[in-house]
Image (cartoon, rainbow, N blue to C red; front, side, top):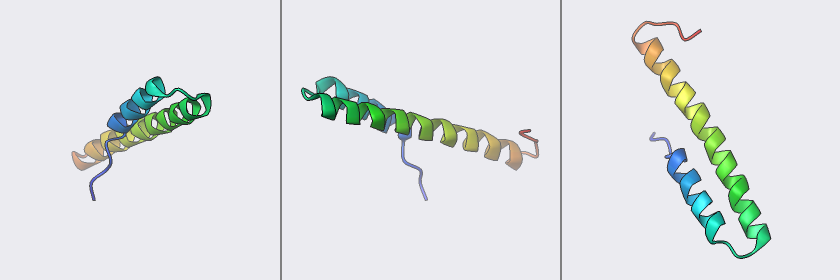
Length: 60
């Protein structure tokens, strides 16, 4: 199963926030951006750990 591109989703949410004219919409988009960035960081860590494990390394 392919993972979503969280970096791209965060960038889109940031763009949507910049284009928003209503404060509540802007805030919602900024919260979405923060959530997508957190998910992207976690996915990046998982990818690094998986690569290390597959080549026989120890991520710890």
